[in-house]
Length: 180
Image (cartoon, rainbow, N blue to C red; front, side, top):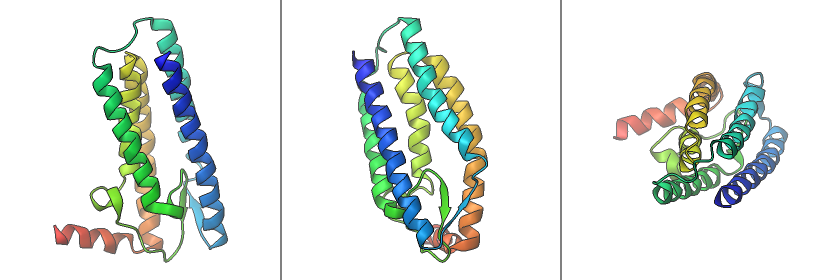
């Protein structure tokens, strides 16, 4: 029962995020933004859908139940979800599931972006570990963590390059390093 509840919450969260991202994308495009990395985006979506499907299948077929660390993992998962919301709120209309670049935009260094360049990606990495581990779906955790890291190894450099070329990204993060 706990699995179904969490699974449905995560799906509803993803659908809400897609709706928010679409709204942000429309706003950005009407203000002169453009998309970068569209060719890898379907793979990223496939990884996220595959993750949910594989998680469901593994949990329903392995019949081992909750992890003995379930309570701790659940608390960590809830914390990670709060950080996710913090990421989205911190970037406002600039947050998206796609790489949407608004030329000349001031890069935000607020919220969790004060400490990490890509906290939202860290959230997804942790989620790909925590959610399966709560239900002892170790195969899903292992496989999709590797797949996610693979897509991020393409996505992050592409995003950073586009931000360097069209915004004050490099200056903003150079300043951060020199202030430390």
